[in-house]
Each structure stands twice: as C-alpha cells, then as structure tokens.
Image 1 (spheres, rainbow, N blue to C red):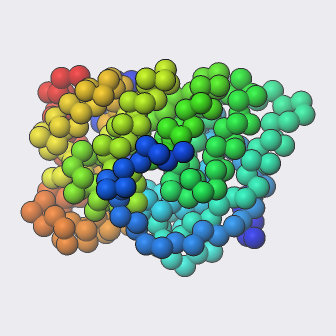
Image 2 (cartoon, rainbow, N blue to C red):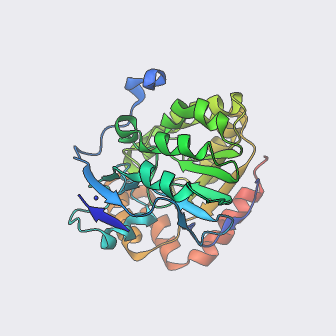
Length: 299
C-alpha cells in the first residue's frame, strides 16, 4: 500500500496482459512532452509484491501513474486506487522510500526466489526515472539477491543507462513494448514514450552487451498497427536489429480504452475509424484475421 507524503509466437493472446547518462539521446527524435506534470512524493509500505501474472512471482512498481500517456493503456484502472482527480497520464507519484523498503524486505533471513516483473502498472523507466533513479537504486539492491530473476518491460530507451547494473544480475531479461514503427502514429498514441527507433537502438545496445531482449507488439490496433503492411514493417525492423523473440497481443476493448481510442481515431485517423468500430462489434472474428496475418509473416 502507498501512503501520501506518496518466445517466438504466431498466436495473438485474446486476453490483454495484466502488466510496462542520456548522452545517447537524440533530442530531435524525442517525443513531445505530454504536458508539464509535477511529480508528487509518496511513501510505500511494500516494494516487492506477489503477483498473479502468469509466469511471474513478484512485481515491482516504483511509480504510481505514467507520463507516457498511451491512449490504449489498460492500467488506467489504477486511477480509482489513487486520490488524483486527473486522468491517467496526467499525474505521477514517485515512491521516495522504495529502495529502502525493498532492502528491508530482502534483508535479514529472506531467501526469496522467483521471477520479478518490473513495471506492471507503470513504466519503471519513464522520463522521471532519469531524475529520481528509483528503479536504478532498486536494481542495485537486487544484484545481491541471485535467487531472483529480473524481467523488465518498458517503452523507454532510458533502460540502456543501466546496462552495467543489468550485467551484474544473475538473470535478467528486458522486453520492449513496440506497437508500430510509424513515428506519426506513435506520437499520437503514446506521446510521452521514446520513439520506436530509439527503443530499437536501446534493444540493440542491450543485446550487444549480452542481455536477452524480446519485443511485445501490443496492442495491435485496428486499421493502424494490425495491417499486413504495418506488421511486415515492424517484424522487418525487429529482425534487422537481431530480435527473434516477439509476442503479439490484440486489443482488449475495455470500455474506457474503447472510448479514448474512438475519440483519437476521429481526430487523427478518421480513415481507420471503420476498422476500429468493426473490431469493437466483432472482436473475436477480427482477432482470427489478425492471427492469420501474423501466420503469413516470416520470422
């Protein structure tokens, strides 16, 4: 609880996952800032928590909220567990005591083992991490606990900053969520995240350093990122980077997500709106078509 102060696969999962030194940055390629958000300091009682996400034992979320502002983000349900009145993507809390709490949980006689997923309802490498370094401090603590495997899921190239620390972990894997290689689409749908090409550059740097990398291509958005051309472009870019492990997931049309997407489609992608509306009416049939498209890809 928080206290204020603060594999290669050709199948599409039908259920959305319940998951998420800057000298390398090219300022001209930076995404525009969603808006000026003043992070709020909070404290937490627990840093390492049990999770029901299949394949993982624990989760870690150093922040509450996420300034990536992804239109399709399922984690917006977290709003009801905070006292923020703003929309998801418009606030951010950083858990100032997170590393200390983690160290206490893992101290003493603790012999915890299992897989830890970093970033299930936030992105542990969102822009604020460059300033606060909470994720970095936490990873340094995990270095001394070799029974814990560390798995990171992010949309940020900032993770390459911590390559030296990731190297020290007994087992570590980094997943990059990449929905499209089209910067124009990315800029609208995930305005605060690193551009897709910078995520790929970071993935390449991690692989060169010997850190396993995979890509979560999700969600596939009707008429935009689920088309045969878009999928071919994405897979081709991943292959050129050397990425072989790719997992796909179709859109899970939660009502709030569907409302946000329809609004954004109308404003920015009106030509694709009929595809979205068709998907919302017949999701199962559309998913079968997506599976067929992925099956025709060569990877």
